Structures are given as structure tokens and as C-alpha cells.
Image 1: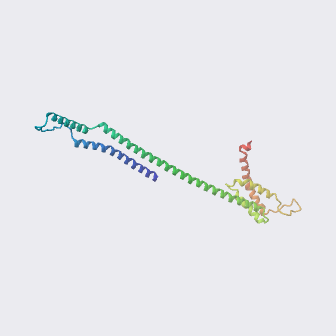
Image 2: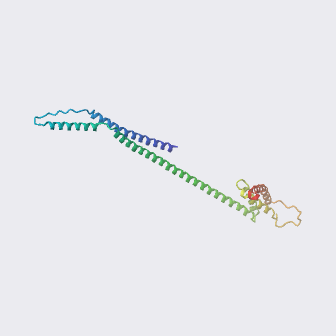
Image 3: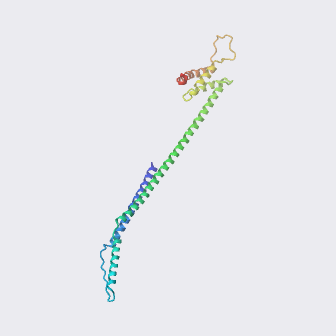
Amino acid sequence: MRWLKRDLWKAGIVIAGTLFFLVLMVWVPVSAAGVREMTSGPAGPVTVTVQATPTEDATVTALNKEKLAQEVKQLQEQNKPDPLGWLRTNVAILFSTLAVVFGGLFGLWRWRVDRQDAQDKELKDRRDAQDKELEDRKAEREKRVEERFQSAVTGLGDEKEGARIGAAILLKTFLRLGYEQFYTQIFQLVAANLRLPRTPNPPEDPAAPLPLTALRHALMMTFMEAFPLARDQEKKKCEDKTCRQ
């Protein structure tokens, strides 16, 4: 808002200065015409006294009087105000001043438009940079999540039972919101591991109960959480048009 107020203040100064220049251009010729009329004064008939000399001819005297009368008339016509000429002069000045004013206003408007375009472009570039940064962060976060999930999947196939138990527990962290893409995979992975034999050497009596190991307990807990989530996800997929068809 500060730059907008500053621009409006500059525009006001330019317009005020231009209007003052316009008034000055119109006032100066009017004042000059008034001063010229005051100094010249009303032009009236001029009485010229010609002293006749005994040797001067009457015809020469008449010619001299006529010449003086013509000079006086010419001076009167020159000092006579000319409204049409004054109007032509001031109209030309007026149009010139208006052209200067409109040119200044157009230049100011063009400058404002160019500046607004530059600010919009700068803002757009900044937003694009922020969006790209967010996308890069999102891609990096998804990459780290995928690496963690693959590490848990690999841990289920480890020879050590402790590593397999840790992997089964780690899979439960991917059953939260934001990890919907792993629900079905976790369910299938845990179900497949539960079908494996509990011990490498099963008892001879198949009806004999087998002890519940820590690994199997961890897998069952993960299975109980993954099953409803995977089921709901499959239902949502079946509600799509492709599934209906």
C-alpha cells in the first residue's frame, strides 16, 4: 500500500504542475496584451503642426499632411486589439499544453501498467518457485517413506527372528492416514507370512497346539489393523466407474 500511495502522490504533483503551466501559458499573453494597450493608450487623431515656410509650396504641404495622416492611421490599426489573432495564439497554446498534459498522463499510466505487470510477473515467479519447492519436498518425503517401507518388507525375510518381529511392528506405522497406498500391500504381506509354518520342524501330531510365538503375535496384530483398512480401500475402488463396468 505504501508504493500505491507514493505513486498517487507523484501523479498528483505531475497533474498539478501541468495545470499550473497551462494557466501560466494562458495568463501571460493576456497580461502582455493588457500592458501593451495601457502603454499605447487610446489612439486618437494626432494634430501635427506644420510650419509653412515662405518657400514651401501648397501642394507639398498637402502631401505632407496626407502622409502624416496615413502614418497615424497605420499606428492606430497596429495598436488596435485583434481578438481573432489573440484567440488563434491562445488556442494553439491551449492545444499544445493539453497535448503535453495528455502525453504526461499517458506516460504515467503506461509506467503504472508496466510496473504492475513487473510486480505480477515477480509474484508469479515467486509462487512458481514455492510450488516447485513444495513438490520437491513432497517427492523427497515420498521417497523416504518408500525406502522405509521397502526396508520393513526386506526385514520380514531376515533369518533372525528379532529382525522379523521389528519389521512386523514397523509395518503398523504405515497403517495411518497418509499411507493409504500401502494398506493392501501390508495386508497381503502379513497374510502371506501368517500362512508360513511356525517352526521348521512341525510336531508329528497335527492336532497338537503350537505355541504362539512373538513373531506370530506381531503379525496377527498387524493383520487385525490392516484387514479393515484394505477392505474399505477395495470398496472405494469398486465404486469407480471402471469397477462398475
